[in-house]
Length: 418
Image 1: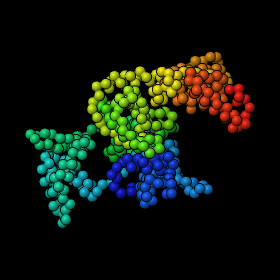
Image 2: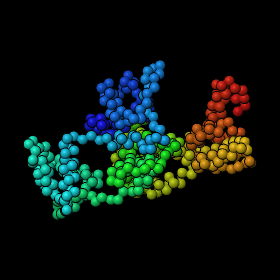
Image 3: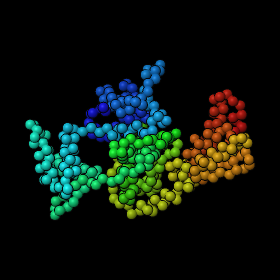
Image 4: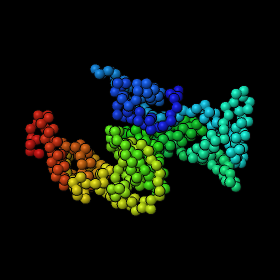
């Protein structure tokens, strides 16, 4: 059974899960944000969710704890358990089941007074019943309307409540795939649980070689951003810095969610009126999203972003050299029995172009806003690169100096000729 301490703020859970499992499991001495007691409480809570995936290794510095998820054996994101393990007060859970029973049996929508009378009747047989006041009932009904569990009808000046009709579930294979690849896959996971409850467990047909699971913790933030985009609405973001030592506020118009194919990290592309440009925000750095006014420029800004994408290798929208775009060209040489090198260039070129110079030589070229975003990818071809050029002279000099430093580190000759 999961740890039962009440969860009042999911942002706190996000922080602890990142501190323990994404950035490295903190020891009791290394955890300085809260007291030692808080450390023990949160560690026990997370172990109750993820104990099956925890591994231990003994090192000279002591026992090292880490998360180990084998995608061949674990077909579903284990971090979704953080969303599914919600605790309730006794009053919450009692009122929930009474309300669900009342609205399930009602043939017509009921007023608050009618629901109140039936609620009291449910509890009248107990010697010391836990009674609910009308204010609490109204708040719970409004919460369920917001969640889509109930719908309302207006009769005169009064609101009447009834259960939202059931809808057919998607095919389980669709839900299975959606739950593991979508930026809001936790929704698919909840629906899959419901389908399994109704129809019995389904068979897993998907296995993922690269399974990026940490985005699960940002599901609520991403969902709020997608709803704002659907309504073409601006939002106010509260964000934190890389080291979580600085909090800032930004009013933006959200335009698109982009996901890195290299590490699964999620970014919000948004227009910032203050700087009058489109920039990116890491979703794991966003603490809260507050909806604002509808933006009359949403369609125009979305088209602007679409026009920029042919020059975006990642999420950078501004050249570091001051030019509008930066040019990158490099040539690779390979053996006759290595055609997969050219095939890999074609597969991974993104917004670039690839041309075959001869049977064993290929050339890649791209015009991008920020050429430095390509450096990690270009390095994977180092042993085969015969020529490379950046229009950003400082970046080219740094790239070649890094290669020379590598030669010196390994005591190799020939580095000075680069």
